[in-house]
Length: 463
Image (tube, rainbow, N blue to C red; front, side, top):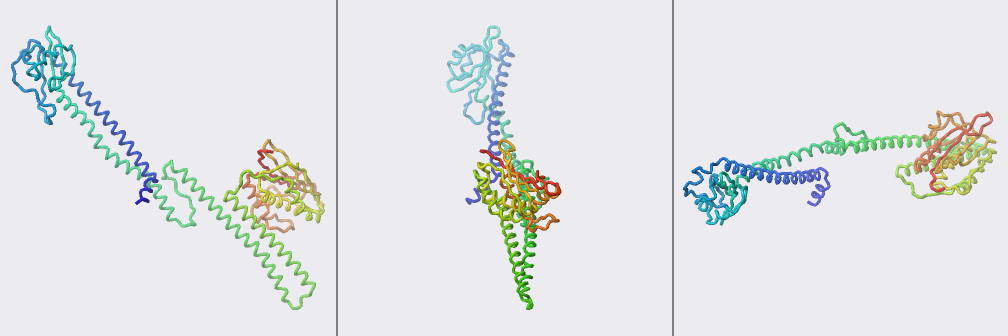
């Protein structure tokens, strides 16, 4: 029972119906009261006009003003059934006025009133009187207040009753109309409930109310993003499986050769070296896959801490110390032009991952005796650009967007790799709102061609 009442309270349809019903009822009641008062007052004004008109039409010398009558006009005001309308018309000096009004002091009290309309009270009765002086005669035309009120109430109620009768019809129409308005959302809810988990097709917005359409559009956009994410994950898993299957297959074949009976010791040593190199490549691939999965998970979960800052130079020193042996093997020149007090708004782990992948690629794809330069440039008041340039073979403009795709490798070079390094860099840059760009380097190789320059632009609030 409690859950049903809670559902009704939280239902937008029932809340809208309740509010509209209360508002319509309140407005109808106010309208009925105003209409009743207006009709009642207008009927009273009409009856006053009739009294005034009768007074002007009467001749003071007419016998009707001095007739001898014993007709009882003094009916009780509280009676439910009133007699037929009676209008009392006499002169103020008429000997019958006290009898007609049922009060011995009626004439005396009336003579003290001026011409015009008055509410006059006798011993037990209320009158509406109009006094007019014509030809030196004062004429009084009176009507019982109870009868006047009865006529006015009947007239006013004739105006109010249609509102009271139409109000339930309006309630019913409002309920039906609201249910029809929400039918589209109910049908859409039923459609979503009947869908399978793999059905991410967009919802039809043609018959959806304008107020709900932005929500459905946002939901369709979410479906599209989920579909793209699922397709991306499927593609990533497929490529990862392929990349892992190749070295594992090679390792399996190499290990199987140890069963050959005529295998020499020199060949065994060679196989062991190949197996070690294959294991190292597989380890590197697994490390890259885990880094890529972690970066994508952080991006999807929006796990970006606030107020994080990392000193660039200490981290860069440790990273260069780790990668310097690789550069020395190729006799490369590695130079750094960075201030000591630079702090970047990124976690140290993610910054190390970004710089390590970029520097490792620069060392790997730059030929022997090449140059690699790391420097910073102040682009604007609150932006700092970190550039890593080399004088290698560079990347063509057509492939500069493709190299950020997972497992994409440039053809025509003999270097081995997983094709995940720049994909990881791109994912982490999107998480931390870092702008990354690839362009021609200011350094040139032996063929007088520019190498590759990788730029990372950070938003610095407090430099």
